[in-house]
Image 1: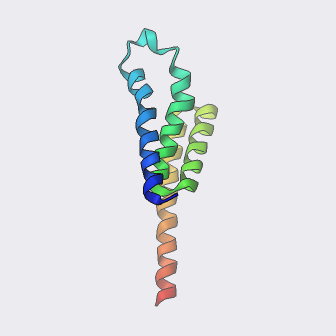
Image 2 (image 1 turned 180 degrees about the vertical axis):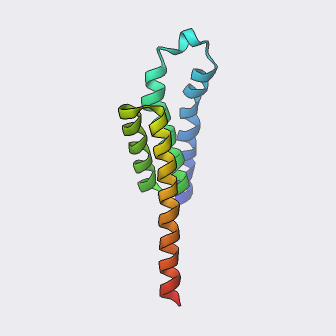
Length: 107
């Protein structure tokens, strides 16, 4: 599959899976409780997976979603959010170290 087709599929997945989240946000609180589990454990992780996949590739996407789900289940939202920040910082450090290694080999 070409990269353009892959991006198009990921974009459509991203757009379709955001619809239930918008409904979750804008519905009256009394009606939302029955959808909370599905949004938290299905729609948001798929949305996160497709977004991370478009941003940084499949490996980063799988690691990010697994980290989110694990920390959310074990420790709650705050820990899951901090885990994502740490993951992005670790990715940035890894990219910088890799770029320095390539620069040293080239010179």
